[in-house]
Image 1 (cartoon, one colour):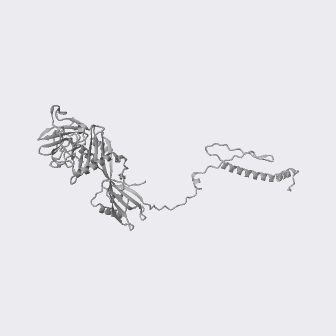
Image 2 (cartoon, one colour):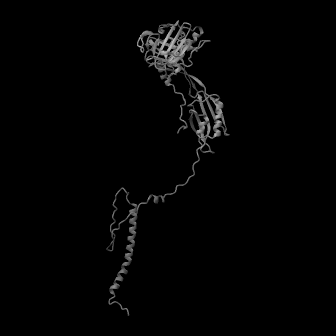
Length: 491
């Protein structure tokens, strides 16, 4: 069958002609629209608002070309990147080799605890065994028989060992059991250790303690900065001339002049020896001055050069209140009247009790209602007794000799007692008499050159009692405080 042309080929030819005319236009429009869509999509991505802020994207105006309108294009932002995907874009950090340990020296203070030795505490901080053994041997050779006390501090200078990073190297070790003597072990260049003792120069320093009596003289002086031994000496020197029961009152002012010993680097080698003291009573001022006469022993004198020492002390302790006098009274515990053979002095528990005079201990121990009791025989005629003690003084036992003012015991409330106090008895010819009624003459006066030297020294001390630096105003010494174990300084 033969193909024939259509009856009218114009419509078909017209469509082809129109398509041929507009085809380049359509291609150009499609290309421009695609480019515009990609540009708008990129802009939408870069200008995408933060998640917490709701912003409506601006709608682009319709694009019209040759009466052809394109529908709005909905731009969908790409999904956010996950953490794992984000990490893929991160740059890998440059791997660096570990830094070598610092060789800078550093300080460490250690403290000896119970059961510790120098070698043991060095082992605790991983000092190599050979080093710590040599250090301990060198130090002991210096100390000889001296033992380091619990709580003693040991100062170390250390550095990291290049051979063993976890084992410190000891450059030096020092210990100072006495303020004036320091023992040092130092590492030499060849790795061995040497030891030396450094002696610090000690010089005297004059200071004063100026305060008022609140409670006892002992407690008031210690609270103001006086060492216990100095205030005890002061009370002992006053007790020959001051009636503590009648004359001593609250608020009375007293001053101590002390000679301290200080090392060249500021450590206190001695807390203070009593040189002179002054007590202002209601109607008079009592002054005592330490002095050593030619060929004699040191003792205290009044400003006239008269020794303060009497045959017996007026009262055997620092007290101001008599709670029960000598004589007949109703017994506070038994409830019946009886002779009170002594004098009761009220005093805080633990107050030192002094021997009234030179003598020998004939009894020291528990004695019925007297409780803990000490009796002294001073000569063939006179004796004294001290009862209700809490404990005996150092070395007090039957048969030993005591000097005047020596501590024979401490106030307590043992035996038949209603509270802390001292029961003090005085015997003459074996019979108890009133100790407060006894009077004893002064003894030991200075004369000649001794008196001249004493008067010059006394005038100097009296001026210093008013003008010497107060203990509170003196710069405190650089005493080492107990340090916790293995604490690096500065950390």
